Length: 266
Ligand code: NAP
Ligand code: GCO
Image (cartoon, rainbow, N blue to C red):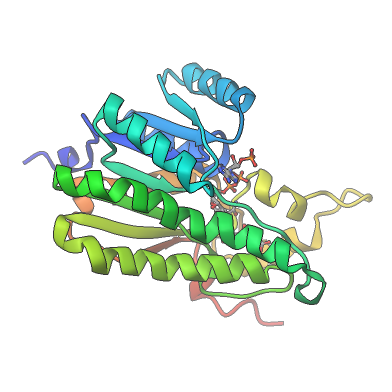
């Protein structure tokens, strides 16, 4: 029995939203290595062309769309085009996301809504657009990129935590509503991963020392380091492949142990 065959994505089509760098790009790279056709979207033409070049450098012939995931009409148009050209997608990763770090009492309702729009409403909009074809195909994998903030709160990230907590429940609800169509919807909850999104939390101080938040995360993580986008590749491949066909509505935390740990004693 060839166990590794279960992890093959040969013949599959995968859309990874916002996969131009960081976590999304690393996930796309692993799917391509496992045999999948890669599709991504981003916010403008210039970024799209640059990303296509980055994929080419890795030997990947990716297809890009300019599509804002919060714009339902644009997403429906992209889904129709993907259906025509590629027969729909077998794997959808809702990766595009934003964060605004602002104390809650200073945050405008507009900023709060913007974060919820990208991090929660958009996974609804995009999943809604692709589920019908998954039902027609008789299978589908949806992977929502959640967060530590799907479980934990902290200062300044009220909108992000509200959205990522909501995304955990959207994940369970998609599983509940469409599991009978052989659609598996799971989440990945990355720990603290070194990407542009978290760069401000790792900036060196004027005296060259570590950012206090950087030291805090290292102390709070049993693995004693930040994660890398590559740390998410194996878990994301598992959830996209036949190896996880009976795993549904689960959030797989890939956090170096943060959620298991009470923290260092003083
Ligand atoms: P990132 O580096 O900021 O990448 C997110 C991507 O989403 C960017 O390419 C961004 O485009 C794109 N995007 C934002 N709004 C969009 C929209 N409306 N339509 C289409 N694309 C849009 O973030 P990352 O750190 O790789 O994070 C990827 C996902 O993992 C996010 O959902 C994030 O919340 C989550 N996550 C990250 C961490 C971490 O520690 N880094 C941990 C847990 C979860 P622009 O750059 O053009 O704005
Ligand atoms: C923050 C961070 C986080 C992470 C991530 C953790 O300001 O606390 O940006 O929210 O990026 O989502 O899992």
